[in-house]
Amino acid sequence: MALYRLLLRADPVNADGWRLLGKAVAKAGDRRTGLACLRRLIALCPADATAFAEYAALLVDQGEEAGAVAVYGVALRCDPLMAQVAFQHGMLLYRQGALKQAEVAFRTVALLVPDLAMAHINRGAVLHAQGAQEAAERSLAHGRRLAPETVEAALNSALVAMAQGRLPDVERHGGRVIVLAPDSVQGYALVANARVHRGRPQNGIALYDRALHMEPDNTGLRVNRGVARLLLGEMAGGWDDLAAHWQSTAPPGGGEDGPPRWSGAAIAAGRLLVVGQPGVGDEILFASLIPELAETGIACRLACDPRLVPLLRRSLPGTEVVARADGPSALAAPGSGADSVAQVRASDLPRYLRRRPEDFARQRPYLAADRHKVAALRARHGDARLCIGISWRSVASEARSLGLEQLAAALAPGLAAAGGRLINLQYGADDRERCLAGLFHEPDIDPSGDLDGFAALVAAMDLVITIDNTTAHIAGGLGVPGWVLLPFMPAWFWGLRGPATPWYPSLRLFRQAIPGDWSGVLAEVAEALRPIGGTRQ
Image (cartoon, rainbow, N blue to C red):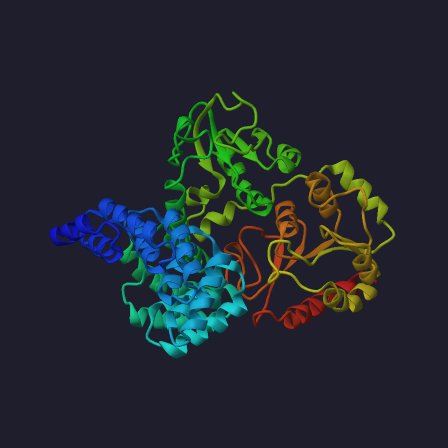
Protein backbone atom coordinates (compact mmCIF):
# COMPACT_ATOMS: atom_id res chain seq x y z
CA MET A 1 0.00 0.00 0.00
CA ALA A 2 2.89 2.36 0.75
CA LEU A 3 4.12 1.91 -2.80
CA TYR A 4 0.71 2.80 -4.22
CA ARG A 5 0.58 5.93 -2.07
CA LEU A 6 4.03 7.01 -3.27
CA LEU A 7 2.93 6.45 -6.85
CA LEU A 8 -0.20 8.56 -6.35
CA ARG A 9 1.75 11.41 -4.73
CA ALA A 10 3.86 11.54 -7.86
CA ASP A 11 0.93 10.99 -10.22
CA PRO A 12 -2.45 11.90 -8.59
CA VAL A 13 -4.37 11.16 -11.80
CA ASN A 14 -3.11 7.61 -12.13
CA ALA A 15 -6.34 5.64 -12.41
CA ASP A 16 -4.70 2.24 -11.92
CA GLY A 17 -3.03 3.50 -8.77
CA TRP A 18 -6.35 4.52 -7.19
CA ARG A 19 -7.89 1.19 -8.21
CA LEU A 20 -5.03 -0.86 -6.73
CA LEU A 21 -4.87 1.19 -3.54
CA GLY A 22 -8.64 0.91 -3.08
CA LYS A 23 -8.51 -2.86 -3.41
CA ALA A 24 -5.58 -3.16 -1.04
CA VAL A 25 -7.02 -1.05 1.79
CA ALA A 26 -10.42 -2.72 1.44
CA LYS A 27 -8.80 -6.14 1.65
CA ALA A 28 -7.05 -4.99 4.82
CA GLY A 29 -10.45 -4.15 6.31
CA ASP A 30 -10.54 -0.39 5.73
CA ARG A 31 -13.61 -0.25 3.49
CA ARG A 32 -14.19 3.45 4.13
CA THR A 33 -10.82 4.37 2.66
CA GLY A 34 -11.38 1.85 -0.11
CA LEU A 35 -14.58 3.63 -1.08
CA ALA A 36 -12.80 6.98 -1.04
CA CYS A 37 -10.14 5.62 -3.40
CA LEU A 38 -12.77 4.29 -5.78
CA ARG A 39 -14.55 7.66 -5.75
CA ARG A 40 -11.31 9.26 -6.90
CA LEU A 41 -11.03 6.63 -9.62
CA ILE A 42 -14.63 7.26 -10.77
CA ALA A 43 -13.97 11.00 -10.85
CA LEU A 44 -11.05 10.32 -13.19
CA CYS A 45 -12.89 7.66 -15.26
CA PRO A 46 -16.64 8.37 -15.07
CA ALA A 47 -17.43 5.64 -17.63
CA ASP A 48 -15.39 2.90 -15.91
CA ALA A 49 -18.00 0.18 -15.36
CA THR A 50 -15.59 -1.94 -13.33
CA ALA A 51 -14.94 0.93 -10.91
CA PHE A 52 -18.66 1.33 -10.26
CA ALA A 53 -19.05 -2.44 -9.82
CA GLU A 54 -16.20 -2.56 -7.29
CA TYR A 55 -17.68 0.41 -5.46
CA ALA A 56 -21.07 -1.34 -5.28
CA ALA A 57 -19.46 -4.52 -3.94
CA LEU A 58 -17.83 -2.55 -1.11
CA LEU A 59 -21.20 -0.95 -0.29
CA VAL A 60 -22.69 -4.42 -0.01
CA ASP A 61 -19.89 -5.45 2.35
CA GLN A 62 -20.81 -2.46 4.52
CA GLY A 63 -24.48 -3.43 4.53
CA GLU A 64 -25.56 -0.52 2.31
CA GLU A 65 -27.54 -2.62 -0.15
CA ALA A 66 -29.90 0.13 -1.30
CA GLY A 67 -26.96 2.29 -2.37
CA ALA A 68 -25.29 -0.70 -4.00
CA VAL A 69 -28.38 -1.34 -6.16
CA ALA A 70 -28.13 2.17 -7.59
CA VAL A 71 -24.37 1.93 -8.20
CA TYR A 72 -24.68 -1.48 -9.90
CA GLY A 73 -27.27 0.14 -12.14
CA VAL A 74 -24.74 2.82 -13.16
CA ALA A 75 -22.13 0.13 -13.86
CA LEU A 76 -24.54 -1.67 -16.18
CA ARG A 77 -25.41 1.53 -18.01
CA CYS A 78 -21.70 1.93 -18.66
CA ASP A 79 -21.35 -1.70 -19.83
CA PRO A 80 -24.60 -3.68 -20.26
CA LEU A 81 -22.68 -6.87 -21.09
CA MET A 82 -21.16 -7.41 -17.64
CA ALA A 83 -22.93 -10.66 -16.76
CA GLN A 84 -21.48 -11.03 -13.25
CA VAL A 85 -22.46 -7.49 -12.37
CA ALA A 86 -25.97 -8.05 -13.72
CA PHE A 87 -26.18 -11.22 -11.62
CA GLN A 88 -25.19 -9.42 -8.41
CA HIS A 89 -27.56 -6.61 -9.29
CA GLY A 90 -30.38 -9.15 -9.65
CA MET A 91 -29.57 -10.72 -6.28
CA LEU A 92 -29.78 -7.35 -4.53
CA LEU A 93 -32.97 -6.37 -6.33
CA TYR A 94 -34.56 -9.66 -5.25
CA ARG A 95 -33.57 -9.11 -1.63
CA GLN A 96 -34.94 -5.56 -1.81
CA GLY A 97 -38.28 -6.86 -3.12
CA ALA A 98 -37.90 -5.24 -6.56
CA LEU A 99 -39.12 -8.37 -8.31
CA LYS A 100 -39.82 -6.93 -11.75
CA GLN A 101 -36.33 -5.46 -12.05
CA ALA A 102 -34.75 -8.62 -10.58
CA GLU A 103 -36.47 -10.78 -13.20
CA VAL A 104 -35.12 -8.52 -15.97
CA ALA A 105 -31.63 -8.76 -14.49
CA PHE A 106 -31.59 -12.57 -14.34
CA ARG A 107 -33.17 -12.83 -17.79
CA THR A 108 -30.36 -10.63 -19.12
CA VAL A 109 -27.73 -12.84 -17.46
CA ALA A 110 -29.34 -15.95 -18.95
CA LEU A 111 -29.12 -14.39 -22.41
CA LEU A 112 -25.47 -13.36 -21.89
CA VAL A 113 -24.42 -16.70 -20.36
CA PRO A 114 -26.98 -19.34 -21.43
CA ASP A 115 -25.17 -22.13 -19.59
CA LEU A 116 -25.14 -20.37 -16.22
CA ALA A 117 -27.60 -22.52 -14.27
CA MET A 118 -28.07 -20.09 -11.38
CA ALA A 119 -29.31 -17.39 -13.73
CA HIS A 120 -32.21 -19.64 -14.77
CA ILE A 121 -32.76 -20.89 -11.22
CA ASN A 122 -32.83 -17.41 -9.70
CA ARG A 123 -35.11 -16.14 -12.44
CA GLY A 124 -37.43 -19.03 -11.63
CA ALA A 125 -37.42 -18.05 -7.95
CA VAL A 126 -38.30 -14.46 -8.85
CA LEU A 127 -41.09 -15.54 -11.19
CA HIS A 128 -42.47 -17.75 -8.42
CA ALA A 129 -42.50 -14.78 -6.06
CA GLN A 130 -44.37 -12.81 -8.74
CA GLY A 131 -46.99 -15.54 -9.04
CA ALA A 132 -45.99 -16.49 -12.60
CA GLN A 133 -45.74 -20.21 -11.80
CA GLU A 134 -45.73 -21.65 -15.34
CA ALA A 135 -42.92 -19.36 -16.46
CA ALA A 136 -41.10 -20.09 -13.20
CA GLU A 137 -41.25 -23.84 -13.83
CA ARG A 138 -39.89 -23.42 -17.38
CA SER A 139 -36.94 -21.41 -16.10
CA LEU A 140 -36.29 -23.83 -13.25
CA ALA A 141 -36.49 -26.84 -15.56
CA HIS A 142 -33.74 -25.25 -17.66
CA GLY A 143 -31.69 -24.73 -14.52
CA ARG A 144 -32.24 -28.34 -13.41
CA ARG A 145 -31.01 -29.64 -16.76
CA LEU A 146 -27.82 -27.56 -16.46
CA ALA A 147 -27.17 -28.33 -12.78
CA PRO A 148 -29.20 -31.28 -11.49
CA GLU A 149 -27.27 -31.40 -8.22
CA THR A 150 -28.13 -27.83 -7.22
CA VAL A 151 -30.13 -27.52 -4.00
CA GLU A 152 -31.63 -24.17 -5.05
CA ALA A 153 -33.06 -25.72 -8.21
CA ALA A 154 -34.76 -28.53 -6.31
CA LEU A 155 -36.02 -26.25 -3.52
CA ASN A 156 -37.53 -23.62 -5.80
CA SER A 157 -39.01 -26.33 -8.02
CA ALA A 158 -40.75 -27.79 -4.98
CA LEU A 159 -42.11 -24.37 -4.02
CA VAL A 160 -43.49 -23.79 -7.52
CA ALA A 161 -45.03 -27.27 -7.58
CA MET A 162 -46.73 -26.57 -4.24
CA ALA A 163 -48.13 -23.29 -5.57
CA GLN A 164 -49.52 -25.16 -8.58
CA GLY A 165 -50.92 -28.02 -6.51
CA ARG A 166 -48.63 -30.60 -8.15
CA LEU A 167 -48.17 -32.56 -4.94
CA PRO A 168 -46.29 -35.58 -6.39
CA ASP A 169 -43.74 -33.14 -7.82
CA VAL A 170 -43.46 -31.41 -4.44
CA GLU A 171 -42.52 -34.75 -2.91
CA ARG A 172 -40.07 -35.50 -5.73
CA HIS A 173 -38.27 -32.16 -5.66
CA GLY A 174 -38.48 -31.86 -1.87
CA GLY A 175 -37.01 -35.35 -1.54
CA ARG A 176 -34.18 -34.22 -3.78
CA VAL A 177 -33.56 -31.27 -1.45
CA ILE A 178 -33.28 -33.65 1.51
CA VAL A 179 -30.79 -35.85 -0.37
CA LEU A 180 -28.62 -32.88 -1.39
CA ALA A 181 -28.95 -31.02 1.92
CA PRO A 182 -29.91 -33.40 4.76
CA ASP A 183 -30.10 -30.50 7.21
CA SER A 184 -32.65 -28.56 5.12
CA VAL A 185 -35.63 -27.94 7.40
CA GLN A 186 -37.51 -26.46 4.46
CA GLY A 187 -37.01 -29.64 2.44
CA TYR A 188 -38.54 -31.80 5.17
CA ALA A 189 -41.39 -29.31 5.64
CA LEU A 190 -42.26 -29.28 1.93
CA VAL A 191 -42.40 -33.06 1.67
CA ALA A 192 -44.38 -33.28 4.91
CA ASN A 193 -46.90 -30.70 3.68
CA ALA A 194 -47.30 -32.56 0.39
CA ARG A 195 -47.93 -35.85 2.15
CA VAL A 196 -50.54 -34.30 4.41
CA HIS A 197 -52.33 -32.71 1.45
CA ARG A 198 -52.25 -36.05 -0.38
CA GLY A 199 -54.16 -37.65 2.49
CA ARG A 200 -51.17 -39.23 4.26
CA PRO A 201 -50.77 -37.11 7.41
CA GLN A 202 -49.21 -39.99 9.33
CA ASN A 203 -46.27 -39.93 6.89
CA GLY A 204 -46.06 -36.16 7.14
CA ILE A 205 -45.86 -36.21 10.93
CA ALA A 206 -42.66 -38.27 10.86
CA LEU A 207 -41.00 -35.62 8.68
CA TYR A 208 -42.27 -32.75 10.83
CA ASP A 209 -40.70 -34.56 13.79
CA ARG A 210 -37.33 -34.68 12.01
CA ALA A 211 -37.54 -31.01 11.05
CA LEU A 212 -38.50 -30.01 14.60
CA HIS A 213 -35.54 -31.98 15.92
CA MET A 214 -33.38 -29.53 13.94
CA GLU A 215 -35.47 -26.44 14.73
CA PRO A 216 -37.41 -27.08 17.94
CA ASP A 217 -38.66 -23.49 18.18
CA ASN A 218 -40.16 -23.39 14.67
CA THR A 219 -43.82 -22.61 15.45
CA GLY A 220 -44.88 -22.95 11.81
CA LEU A 221 -43.74 -26.58 11.80
CA ARG A 222 -45.55 -27.25 15.06
CA VAL A 223 -48.77 -25.76 13.72
CA ASN A 224 -48.57 -27.89 10.57
CA ARG A 225 -47.85 -31.00 12.63
CA GLY A 226 -50.77 -30.09 14.88
CA VAL A 227 -53.16 -29.91 11.92
CA ALA A 228 -51.91 -33.31 10.71
CA ARG A 229 -52.50 -34.77 14.16
CA LEU A 230 -56.02 -33.36 14.34
CA LEU A 231 -56.81 -34.87 10.94
CA LEU A 232 -55.88 -38.25 12.41
CA GLY A 233 -57.91 -37.66 15.54
CA GLU A 234 -54.84 -37.19 17.76
CA MET A 235 -56.47 -34.33 19.60
CA ALA A 236 -54.27 -33.87 22.66
CA GLY A 237 -51.04 -33.65 20.68
CA GLY A 238 -52.70 -31.63 17.93
CA TRP A 239 -54.04 -28.95 20.25
CA ASP A 240 -50.75 -28.76 22.14
CA ASP A 241 -48.91 -28.19 18.87
CA LEU A 242 -51.31 -25.47 17.77
CA ALA A 243 -51.01 -23.79 21.16
CA ALA A 244 -47.30 -23.19 20.47
CA HIS A 245 -48.31 -20.55 17.91
CA TRP A 246 -50.64 -18.69 20.27
CA GLN A 247 -48.11 -18.78 23.08
CA SER A 248 -45.53 -17.11 20.82
CA THR A 249 -47.84 -14.19 19.96
CA ALA A 250 -49.25 -11.38 22.05
CA PRO A 251 -52.50 -12.15 23.88
CA PRO A 252 -55.52 -10.94 21.85
CA GLY A 253 -57.37 -9.02 24.55
CA GLY A 254 -55.33 -5.88 25.16
CA GLY A 255 -51.93 -7.46 24.50
CA GLU A 256 -49.59 -7.90 27.42
CA ASP A 257 -51.46 -5.13 29.29
CA GLY A 258 -54.68 -7.17 29.26
CA PRO A 259 -55.70 -9.97 31.60
CA PRO A 260 -53.40 -13.00 31.93
CA ARG A 261 -53.72 -16.02 29.66
CA TRP A 262 -56.17 -18.62 30.89
CA SER A 263 -54.59 -21.82 32.17
CA GLY A 264 -57.73 -23.94 32.05
CA ALA A 265 -58.39 -23.48 35.77
CA ALA A 266 -61.73 -22.61 37.38
CA ILE A 267 -62.63 -18.92 37.68
CA ALA A 268 -64.43 -18.02 40.87
CA ALA A 269 -65.20 -14.38 40.11
CA GLY A 270 -65.05 -12.18 37.06
CA ARG A 271 -65.25 -13.23 33.43
CA LEU A 272 -63.10 -15.21 31.04
CA LEU A 273 -62.48 -13.13 27.90
CA VAL A 274 -62.78 -15.44 24.88
CA VAL A 275 -61.51 -13.86 21.66
CA GLY A 276 -62.51 -15.26 18.30
CA GLN A 277 -60.21 -15.07 15.29
CA PRO A 278 -61.22 -14.04 11.75
CA GLY A 279 -63.26 -16.69 9.97
CA VAL A 280 -67.00 -16.92 10.67
CA GLY A 281 -67.12 -20.70 10.35
CA ASP A 282 -64.27 -21.17 12.81
CA GLU A 283 -65.86 -18.73 15.25
CA ILE A 284 -69.13 -20.69 15.19
CA LEU A 285 -67.28 -23.97 15.72
CA PHE A 286 -65.20 -22.81 18.69
CA ALA A 287 -68.08 -20.90 20.30
CA SER A 288 -69.85 -24.25 20.63
CA LEU A 289 -67.61 -24.88 23.66
CA ILE A 290 -68.80 -21.84 25.61
CA PRO A 291 -71.98 -23.50 26.95
CA GLU A 292 -69.75 -26.14 28.51
CA LEU A 293 -67.70 -23.44 30.25
CA ALA A 294 -70.92 -21.91 31.54
CA GLU A 295 -72.01 -25.29 32.93
CA THR A 296 -68.80 -25.45 34.96
CA GLY A 297 -69.49 -22.01 36.44
CA ILE A 298 -67.15 -19.95 34.26
CA ALA A 299 -68.80 -16.74 33.07
CA CYS A 300 -67.55 -15.69 29.65
CA ARG A 301 -67.24 -12.54 27.60
CA LEU A 302 -67.00 -13.45 23.90
CA ALA A 303 -65.47 -10.99 21.44
CA CYS A 304 -66.50 -12.06 17.94
CA ASP A 305 -67.14 -10.86 14.40
CA PRO A 306 -69.69 -8.01 14.64
CA ARG A 307 -71.96 -9.84 12.19
CA LEU A 308 -72.30 -12.73 14.64
CA VAL A 309 -73.22 -10.66 17.70
CA PRO A 310 -77.06 -10.83 17.39
CA LEU A 311 -77.05 -14.58 16.72
CA LEU A 312 -74.57 -15.46 19.47
CA ARG A 313 -76.21 -13.20 22.05
CA ARG A 314 -79.44 -15.15 21.59
CA SER A 315 -77.63 -18.49 21.49
CA LEU A 316 -75.40 -18.04 24.54
CA PRO A 317 -77.51 -16.82 27.46
CA GLY A 318 -75.36 -15.70 30.35
CA THR A 319 -72.44 -14.92 28.07
CA GLU A 320 -71.67 -11.30 27.31
CA VAL A 321 -71.20 -11.18 23.53
CA VAL A 322 -69.40 -8.11 22.14
CA ALA A 323 -68.06 -7.09 18.77
CA ARG A 324 -64.39 -7.86 18.23
CA ALA A 325 -62.35 -4.81 17.28
CA ASP A 326 -59.33 -4.48 15.06
CA GLY A 327 -56.13 -3.39 16.79
CA PRO A 328 -54.26 -4.32 19.98
CA SER A 329 -57.44 -4.73 22.05
CA ALA A 330 -60.10 -7.24 21.07
CA LEU A 331 -62.84 -5.13 22.63
CA ALA A 332 -64.55 -2.40 20.65
CA ALA A 333 -65.77 -0.40 23.67
CA PRO A 334 -63.07 0.88 26.07
CA GLY A 335 -63.62 -0.43 29.58
CA SER A 336 -66.10 -3.07 28.44
CA GLY A 337 -63.79 -5.82 29.67
CA ALA A 338 -62.95 -4.37 33.07
CA ASP A 339 -63.98 -7.52 34.96
CA SER A 340 -62.12 -9.94 32.64
CA VAL A 341 -59.75 -11.86 34.91
CA ALA A 342 -58.25 -14.11 32.22
CA GLN A 343 -58.25 -14.35 28.45
CA VAL A 344 -58.05 -17.10 25.86
CA ARG A 345 -58.31 -17.37 22.10
CA ALA A 346 -61.45 -19.25 21.15
CA SER A 347 -59.34 -21.59 19.03
CA ASP A 348 -57.38 -22.60 22.14
CA LEU A 349 -60.47 -23.78 24.06
CA PRO A 350 -60.37 -27.34 22.64
CA ARG A 351 -56.92 -27.79 24.19
CA TYR A 352 -58.71 -27.82 27.55
CA LEU A 353 -62.14 -29.20 26.61
CA ARG A 354 -61.67 -31.61 23.66
CA ARG A 355 -58.52 -33.64 24.29
CA ARG A 356 -60.17 -37.08 23.89
CA PRO A 357 -62.92 -38.49 21.66
CA GLU A 358 -65.12 -39.05 24.70
CA ASP A 359 -65.02 -35.32 25.45
CA PHE A 360 -67.39 -34.84 22.50
CA ALA A 361 -70.18 -36.61 24.39
CA ARG A 362 -71.11 -33.13 25.61
CA GLN A 363 -71.16 -31.62 22.10
CA ARG A 364 -74.61 -30.47 21.04
CA PRO A 365 -76.23 -27.87 18.76
CA TYR A 366 -76.25 -24.49 20.44
CA LEU A 367 -77.22 -21.82 17.93
CA ALA A 368 -80.71 -20.37 18.32
CA ALA A 369 -82.20 -18.64 15.28
CA ASP A 370 -84.88 -15.97 15.60
CA ARG A 371 -87.99 -18.16 15.92
CA HIS A 372 -90.33 -15.51 14.47
CA LYS A 373 -88.19 -15.17 11.35
CA VAL A 374 -87.98 -18.96 11.06
CA ALA A 375 -91.74 -19.32 11.30
CA ALA A 376 -92.31 -16.65 8.66
CA LEU A 377 -89.85 -18.29 6.28
CA ARG A 378 -91.38 -21.72 6.77
CA ALA A 379 -94.84 -20.30 6.10
CA ARG A 380 -93.57 -18.73 2.88
CA HIS A 381 -92.47 -22.14 1.63
CA GLY A 382 -95.39 -24.08 3.06
CA ASP A 383 -96.52 -25.26 -0.39
CA ALA A 384 -93.27 -27.25 -0.85
CA ARG A 385 -93.15 -30.74 0.64
CA LEU A 386 -89.35 -30.57 1.03
CA CYS A 387 -87.20 -27.42 1.30
CA ILE A 388 -83.54 -27.99 0.49
CA GLY A 389 -81.11 -25.12 0.91
CA ILE A 390 -77.98 -25.36 -1.22
CA SER A 391 -74.58 -23.66 -1.33
CA TRP A 392 -71.92 -24.66 -3.82
CA ARG A 393 -69.14 -22.10 -3.79
CA SER A 394 -66.43 -20.99 -1.38
CA VAL A 395 -64.93 -17.55 -1.84
CA ALA A 396 -61.84 -18.80 0.00
CA SER A 397 -61.07 -21.99 -1.93
CA GLU A 398 -61.65 -23.15 -5.48
CA ALA A 399 -60.87 -26.73 -4.41
CA ARG A 400 -63.88 -26.70 -2.07
CA SER A 401 -66.24 -25.33 -4.74
CA LEU A 402 -68.24 -27.26 -7.31
CA GLY A 403 -70.35 -26.35 -10.32
CA LEU A 404 -73.96 -25.40 -9.63
CA GLU A 405 -75.09 -27.12 -12.82
CA GLN A 406 -73.52 -30.40 -11.63
CA LEU A 407 -75.14 -30.13 -8.21
CA ALA A 408 -78.58 -29.21 -9.55
CA ALA A 409 -78.50 -32.11 -12.05
CA ALA A 410 -77.64 -34.59 -9.29
CA LEU A 411 -80.48 -33.37 -7.07
CA ALA A 412 -83.13 -33.08 -9.78
CA PRO A 413 -84.57 -36.66 -9.73
CA GLY A 414 -84.93 -36.86 -5.95
CA LEU A 415 -86.20 -33.30 -5.73
CA ALA A 416 -88.88 -33.95 -8.35
CA ALA A 417 -89.99 -37.15 -6.61
CA ALA A 418 -90.34 -35.30 -3.30
CA GLY A 419 -92.10 -32.27 -4.70
CA GLY A 420 -89.23 -30.31 -3.22
CA ARG A 421 -87.87 -26.83 -3.69
CA LEU A 422 -84.30 -25.60 -3.88
CA ILE A 423 -83.58 -22.50 -1.77
CA ASN A 424 -80.54 -20.38 -2.44
CA LEU A 425 -78.09 -20.25 0.49
CA GLN A 426 -75.15 -19.13 -1.63
CA TYR A 427 -73.54 -15.77 -1.02
CA GLY A 428 -73.02 -13.89 -4.28
CA ALA A 429 -75.30 -16.04 -6.45
CA ASP A 430 -76.42 -14.10 -9.52
CA ASP A 431 -79.67 -14.15 -11.49
CA ARG A 432 -78.21 -16.44 -14.15
CA GLU A 433 -77.25 -19.06 -11.56
CA ARG A 434 -80.58 -18.86 -9.77
CA CYS A 435 -82.43 -19.24 -13.06
CA LEU A 436 -80.22 -22.13 -14.16
CA ALA A 437 -80.98 -24.21 -11.08
CA GLY A 438 -84.53 -22.97 -10.47
CA LEU A 439 -83.51 -21.58 -7.08
CA PHE A 440 -85.91 -19.73 -4.86
CA HIS A 441 -84.20 -16.60 -3.56
CA GLU A 442 -84.84 -14.57 -0.41
CA PRO A 443 -83.85 -11.05 -1.55
CA ASP A 444 -84.13 -9.53 1.94
CA ILE A 445 -81.50 -11.85 3.45
CA ASP A 446 -77.80 -11.26 2.80
CA PRO A 447 -75.90 -14.53 3.52
CA SER A 448 -72.74 -12.54 4.22
CA GLY A 449 -73.84 -9.35 5.97
CA ASP A 450 -77.01 -10.49 7.77
CA LEU A 451 -75.86 -13.65 9.52
CA ASP A 452 -78.75 -13.58 11.99
CA GLY A 453 -81.29 -13.52 9.16
CA PHE A 454 -79.28 -16.11 7.27
CA ALA A 455 -79.31 -18.43 10.31
CA ALA A 456 -83.12 -18.16 10.36
CA LEU A 457 -83.23 -19.11 6.67
CA VAL A 458 -81.00 -22.13 7.31
CA ALA A 459 -83.14 -23.13 10.30
CA ALA A 460 -86.24 -23.06 8.06
CA MET A 461 -84.82 -25.76 5.79
CA ASP A 462 -85.70 -29.45 5.93
CA LEU A 463 -82.23 -30.26 4.61
CA VAL A 464 -79.09 -28.25 3.79
CA ILE A 465 -76.69 -29.45 1.09
CA THR A 466 -73.50 -27.43 1.02
CA ILE A 467 -69.79 -27.49 0.44
CA ASP A 468 -67.38 -26.64 3.28
CA ASN A 469 -68.20 -23.01 4.03
CA THR A 470 -69.99 -20.89 6.62
CA THR A 471 -73.33 -22.46 5.67
CA ALA A 472 -72.12 -25.86 6.89
CA HIS A 473 -71.10 -24.43 10.27
CA ILE A 474 -74.38 -22.58 10.73
CA ALA A 475 -76.42 -25.70 9.85
CA GLY A 476 -74.34 -27.80 12.23
CA GLY A 477 -74.51 -25.22 15.00
CA LEU A 478 -78.30 -25.07 14.62
CA GLY A 479 -78.68 -28.84 14.52
CA VAL A 480 -80.34 -28.68 11.07
CA PRO A 481 -79.86 -31.87 8.99
CA GLY A 482 -77.10 -31.12 6.54
CA TRP A 483 -75.00 -32.86 3.94
CA VAL A 484 -71.50 -31.46 3.53
CA LEU A 485 -69.65 -32.16 0.29
CA LEU A 486 -65.93 -32.29 1.01
CA PRO A 487 -62.82 -32.18 -1.19
CA PHE A 488 -60.28 -34.99 -1.04
CA MET A 489 -58.23 -33.07 1.52
CA PRO A 490 -60.70 -31.51 3.98
CA ALA A 491 -60.19 -29.02 6.78
CA TRP A 492 -58.98 -30.57 10.04
CA PHE A 493 -62.37 -30.45 11.80
CA TRP A 494 -63.95 -32.80 9.23
CA GLY A 495 -61.29 -35.47 9.78
CA LEU A 496 -60.00 -37.76 7.04
CA ARG A 497 -62.57 -40.52 6.99
CA GLY A 498 -66.12 -41.40 7.86
CA PRO A 499 -69.55 -39.85 7.28
CA ALA A 500 -69.73 -37.88 10.53
CA THR A 501 -67.93 -35.23 12.55
CA PRO A 502 -68.15 -35.04 16.35
CA TRP A 503 -68.32 -31.25 16.14
CA TYR A 504 -71.73 -31.24 14.44
CA PRO A 505 -73.82 -34.40 15.03
CA SER A 506 -76.56 -33.31 12.58
CA LEU A 507 -74.23 -33.24 9.58
CA ARG A 508 -73.47 -36.07 7.17
CA LEU A 509 -70.21 -35.93 5.23
CA PHE A 510 -69.69 -36.90 1.59
CA ARG A 511 -66.02 -37.14 0.61
CA GLN A 512 -64.14 -37.02 -2.69
CA ALA A 513 -62.36 -40.30 -3.41
CA ILE A 514 -60.18 -38.68 -6.09
CA PRO A 515 -58.78 -35.14 -5.75
CA GLY A 516 -60.86 -32.69 -7.74
CA ASP A 517 -63.46 -35.27 -8.84
CA TRP A 518 -66.96 -34.46 -7.61
CA SER A 519 -68.73 -37.12 -9.68
CA GLY A 520 -68.58 -39.81 -6.99
CA VAL A 521 -69.76 -37.39 -4.31
CA LEU A 522 -72.72 -36.23 -6.40
CA ALA A 523 -73.69 -39.80 -7.22
CA GLU A 524 -73.77 -40.60 -3.48
CA VAL A 525 -75.82 -37.49 -2.77
CA ALA A 526 -78.33 -38.36 -5.50
CA GLU A 527 -78.64 -41.88 -4.10
CA ALA A 528 -79.11 -40.57 -0.55
CA LEU A 529 -81.83 -38.17 -1.69
CA ARG A 530 -83.86 -40.82 -3.50
CA PRO A 531 -85.45 -42.46 -0.41
CA ILE A 532 -86.23 -39.03 1.08
CA GLY A 533 -88.14 -38.20 -2.08
CA GLY A 534 -90.08 -41.46 -1.77
CA THR A 535 -91.19 -40.73 1.79
CA ARG A 536 -92.40 -37.20 0.91
CA GLN A 537 -94.86 -38.23 -1.81
